[in-house]
Amino acid sequence: MVQDHSSVLVIEPSQGYVRVGWGELWAARELFYFLAWRDLKTRYAQTAIGAGWALLQPLLSTMIFTVVFSYVVKVPSDGVPYPLFVFAAILPWALFARSLERSTLSVVTEGGLIKKVYFPRLIIPIAATFINLVDFAVGLLLLLGMMLWYQIVPPWTLVCLPLFVGGAVVTALSVSLWLSALNVKYRDVASIVPLMTQLWMFASPVLYPASLVPEPVRVYYGLNPMAGVIEGVRWALLGKAAPDWGMVAVSLGVVTILLGGGVMFFRRVERTFADVI
Image (cartoon, rainbow, N blue to C red; front, side, top):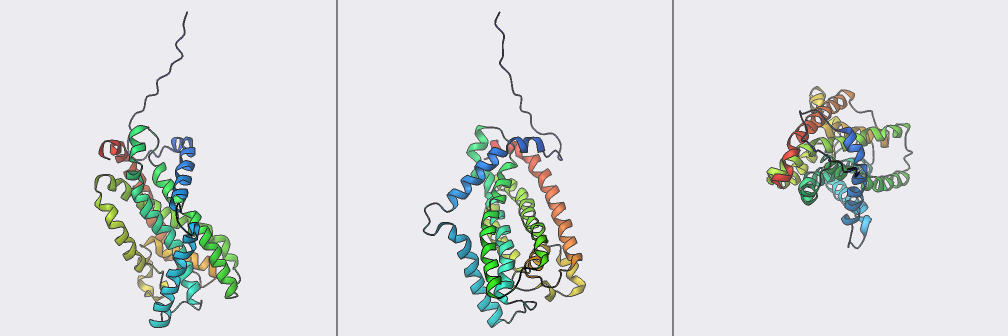
């Protein structure tokens, strides 16, 4: 008698809006490692200075911003040397901007993989976002060196840094979930994102302190989620005056809403990715 040991795997489209599929995401963690490692290797492949770009880009931006906004425009920096003030903001901003731009393109970029095999599509923008923490870590080492140069001892608030770095990552992921899904059908989104990030930077306290924003409207300024993140990173790293916690709370609330809505929207439309790409 011959026994049939074959099995049939039935894959059904997700139902409803709110199921994240944590079990599927955990089961696909090796794919997450593969996508992140491949992105990291290809990013600096065939470049002359390799990972040195992770230092050179923010360093050159800091030099230019210091000349223009500190020496020419005379923007205050809350008592902190302006190069440190702006570099401490460029790090989380670069983490956010790079993650947003790469994650927005990620689903279309992985179109060939999506058409061939089923896996939780959420892995794609998550991997494209988290890999940018490597560049952030490299830049953070440079910032600590700059703090030694200016004889600034890292304060106890440094222990709070992971909270605000996590805020930058979650903010980028929450926005990119919307944009990466929209980019599958409307490729104009990919062209809009670079312009959007440039305008968003000037609307965030990267080059100026949030204290320049009139106090009565500072809470509403927190509707920009990166405002609370950047002020929090400066506070954690440089020990400057504590940020407006009301503004930070508003920023966290906005991120939570964006993330929840982004996950539901992405899960809702992911079933059409293979047909549209």
